[in-house]
Image (cartoon, rainbow, N blue to C red; front, top):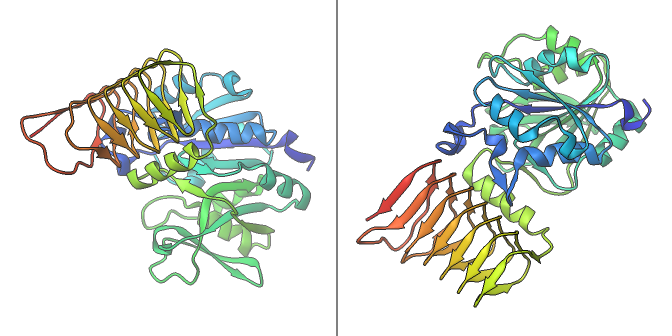
Length: 360
């Protein structure tokens, strides 16, 4: 292998996002933003930074149009993007087979589009190129191995892969980044669907192990997040916001900004206090409000007479006249939250797009 020059990228961006409903009833889970950037974009940028410019994105019929529109031809990232439609979410190994006409005989990186990996993938690509295995898988220690594909090592070598084991013998979970040679296509063809009816990538990698192919592993050093659930989404938002460098291109009127805060062009802060890390999107209006740390406010949002902390507001949403602080919340696009006649003492919200919530 000659480095990343002949490596292709494959990003999986299908799936229904059931754990983030109601947000994902109306939007692809991979486009829900972290620090005002769609999760999917982090994966694309990681590939480009690792020298991979030819990228295929697996899309589902239901959300593919939205993803095509957001990503375009890839030129905004310095990449060339090909969209590959997967008729049904029949497993990661099925996605690999679906992408075979695009991948051909080239080695490739497969990246789950709703995952975030600190530090990117360049180190992995370099090791894959140097060691020339048939597969390189990324692992991380987890507290609940029953919820993941788990890898058992023997003498440091990959021995067994088990999908969501009832009695796990290891706490090393597969992270959603894999590097493969074209051998994986034959392995995916050789396996049978799992009890849940999917072609599991764990079974395909196990087939590589069983047939004497070289499967290497590496334990992730930084953080890794699967953003499929609200708690993980908010944690990913915190982790990314922690890397911010503050900048102000908006308008501040009798307002105070502390710490690392990004205020985008056209945003207006009036009699507001913002404590970073936080990001305020283009055209947002923050009036008589407090924005606490780890909050991302999207384009065109309005926060009026309200306090907000550790939350994500998607584009065009508004929160107004709240007596209690809103925290740990994800508010969908165009959603509206306002105070009714009475208020409870604490609020925790997951609000879908175009919602209107009037609290008692």
